[in-house]
Length: 434
Image (cartoon, rainbow, N blue to C red):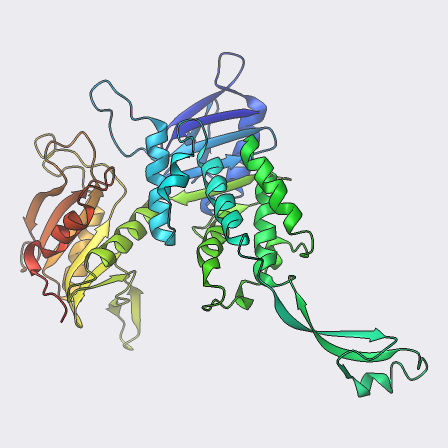
């Protein structure tokens, strides 16, 4: 089994013995990547299949074929001095970001048992899923009553008179019965079984394979349903089964129902991919909501929905959707646009590597939403001399808007709540809720 790890925007050579992987492995990996929903029409938004190398784009995760797997990790920090950040640290950070977005509780005891340095991201996520599923099954597998129809030699439940005197009129030895039966064959269990079966085809560590086999045995009574036919809409979580909420969100991700992932099982391959721009935005929005929970400020993710233009018939065109709006009541007091890009120090570039298109977009947001404070938020990295926070503040000419360039250090959880509050409250001085 060929296993390799690279970082986003990094490359891996293929070809003869002097290269990192053989040509056939590169072809398989590129084919699986191209089938992902994130690949785009050109098919190269995940992996660019060059003549001598595969080059990762701004997508991270796992691409696995029958006998080869490629792990793509975020490239968050520059090297610190001569030290390269351990891949285990990057994996742990990525898992914590996913946990925040998915509302997953990661127990410290369980996390210490994971081999972050040796196991791939996929194996770690499988380990988290199987451990949580094993723990919740100790309290019993959910069951419910479903209505059944069956022709029996004796009465069970109630008679279906219409069927009895039509279809079974010539066979009086059978009775058309309708009855309620307690069964495990329900949508929630079918989803869990589909996740177990799908992951069993791609798990490579002995521990994960053994646990998946044990879980598969527990789901023998549950009907196997193709991933595309799973009935997510039939699941209703209440106080009796709310303990399954975390597992349901995790299964949805692993089965390709979130983050535009694709899962093809053991045949054509398996991919579990995340677009870092989207993940960074959702992570910041979720953490901001937690940080501002006790204030009068409200965080709105992907909100706004105002249009830029109107034609002669007053038809509105070009709807906007800012990443994050900070509102007090109905008034927008700050607009934050997250960018998974590296900026540089102002001493090296007065524009700090900020895209001109991003500036134009923020100017339009400020005018449209009548918001004076505009923030472009980037991930912090070792190459920046000040700590995370405000790096530059600019006045928009001809208006009362100010654009600030800020960074957030997601490499550490130290005082993260305070740092996120500072991202917003520096100017607004949010009032505590009463």
